[in-house]
Structures are given as C-alpha cells and as structure tokens.
Image 1 (cartoon, one colour):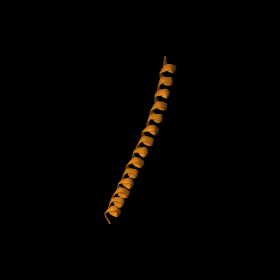
Image 2: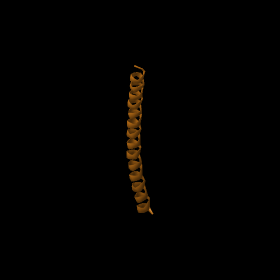
Image 3: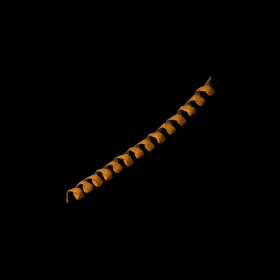
Image 4: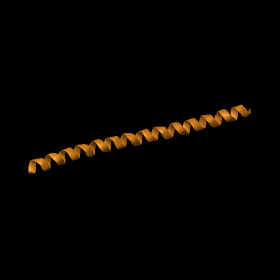
Length: 53
C-alpha cells in the first residue's frame, strides 16, 4: 500500500517534469526563431548601410 503511494507520487512528478521540459523546449525554439529573424534583419540593415555609403 505504501509502495503504491510512492509510485503514484513519483509518476505524478515525472509527468510534471515532462511538462516543464516540453514547455522549456518550446520556449527555446521560439527564441531560436526570434534570433534567426533578428540576424536576418541585421544582415539586411548592414547591406542597406553599405549600399548607401
């Protein structure tokens, strides 16, 4: 009975941790997309600046 409760608690903790890790991965992916977009904008701006001078 006691072992069963411990197993249930561990299972719940694993599920919660899984959700946290998944959420963090989604946030990382979003930041990577944002970084790629900003990098592209910087390259475009540098090209514009070079073409002006």
